[in-house]
Length: 350
Length: 132
Image (cartoon, rainbow over all chains, first blue to last red; front, side):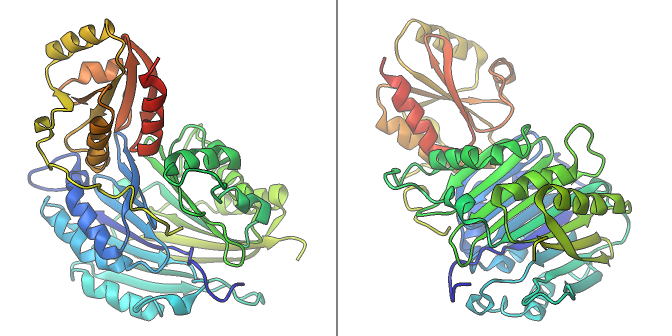
């Protein structure tokens, strides 16, 4: 591992809102004007580099990851040394202006490759929790913080950190069958990682065209062929994309440099997806793009339905197709925010 | 990953809100006026770039300055904006499912399209199709 470098591991924030009781507008949060969104992003220290909207949601590719805006849900994910938690209060205020009340908040992240390079409060999870709590209204009474640490004897086990706060423990219909899968990959195959470096001679300005080429060459466009992809290539290397497919989002971010290489794949989909491809197959295709030596998968089940078959199937498919052995499987429940399953994998040969 | 973005962020002068004042981009909100314009363009060799947008669409707002810059830069190309809420039939006719969508038309026929706020790709295609 390098001594220092760009931090690929993201901080992720998800805010869910109740539907408005007065002045109802089906667009909900999507009515927040772009200028206001931009101001919040400036506080977080990132900017929009590409974007697309479909019938269901708006997807923004940021200089440091992604932002998704649904009518009653916001997901923002940022990497590097961004100040993600500074966005909580501004987002809550903007939503309030649209008569939308906060229902639940989730903050999660893996373990930083360079923890000492992070600014306060990201230097310790306890401090992040204190910061999140200070930004939330008291109405979010059900709170839980958890650090899921694999207990196997690998040098530096990467833990999964989650903090959730919820106004109630009643199932949120709009979140009921939603599955969010977050895959974090490190020690990427060096040859595969080369795809995400801009080639010499590439005009520095052609970042979305260069991104398009990376999407094709890496095979990222085959992960979900139904998805429309909004991609972007950074200077001199690095790649981001948002996938948009009906209500479903997906997002990939790559830091390809050897010594601190990292790639993330996240998607939100319905537990009862028919004809959309099996979750395990989708994950397998995504991980295969990078052939990493270390993978962690955090799956969040929004509603009451937990299907252990999905977890086991993912383990079987990854073992069979990619030779990745599951080294640990942890589970935790979060009141009003569902269940999280955290799996860690490394190649079988170890 | 945190690279140089100066060429993409904002740009200089952008009149927020009233871009109809910007003479290089024409906004259409009436179906009959649009049809008239489209028919006129059919008989010309000029490249027509249609930006399908919606007033509430964040990604469209994000792209606005870039579109205006492009219109100022390529004076031989016709840049228009169509509000999908005001002209839903036209949006349907052009199969617009995501926004912003840019459709490049020459002599009444679609020659290319870009979906999403992709500045470089749009510019590349405008350059490709403007002369022929």
